[in-house]
Image (cartoon, rainbow, N blue to C red; front, side, top):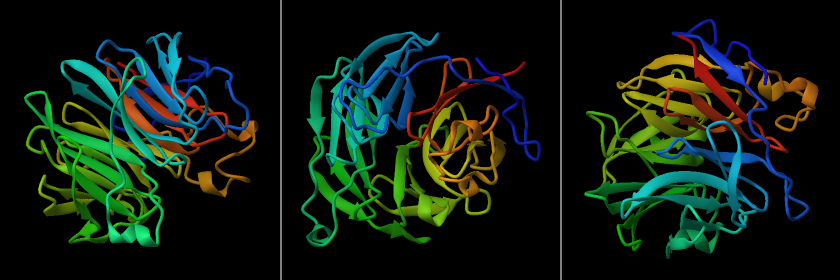
Length: 314
């Protein structure tokens, strides 16, 4: 285990300890996969789920880093979203290689799938789903959202049963440029808003359930937002170009974590030599998730994968 400061000194509101090597990714069962770590979430009982480009792709760990379960053939593993279905936790999984978006239970049984919509954009562009978000009421899904961040640059809306309804190409801030990650905001005063990590435009756009544009934020302090996770009033945002960002309940910058300002200038980025992957600095964060004790788990877009835990210091 390695420990180092993880806060950017310019904006740090607190101190964090940095932990690597607290879990191991298993050897792939099939050759030829890059094992990039693309998704992470924390279950209600504290178990950590990692989604990576390998077979098996879904890895479930204890809080201490013991591998408890592994399943799923998703060689292009990308977005991971935890939801509740019938009182039980389930996972929305997107695969950019297979072009699928599936809901699976924690044993790997597929419960539902979102199909590519019949949209004219697909006469010319590919369908490459990157993330799913779900809005629920009384334990039932009422709106499903699917981001096609790498193909059409659209976000598709489905009803609670998975029937396609309409698509978003952007809002009043302009058209999306890689709407990479999406989430339905659960925070007080903002609940139900769809957040779109408009990564290529270095900002976040917001919409209501009907697809009406509500505004945008982050253009003054974000450079590459990938996706979101929430704890209380705070939101953590993985940023691909070398940092993790925390914002408050009014979407104001709280702090940057593990910021490496020259990350993309490193030779071969993101697949840099091991000596250039340094404790205390992120290389290519792709997703981040809060833990039960306020810790932050971060996975990175790098061959072989990288999973880091940041723990707040009292």
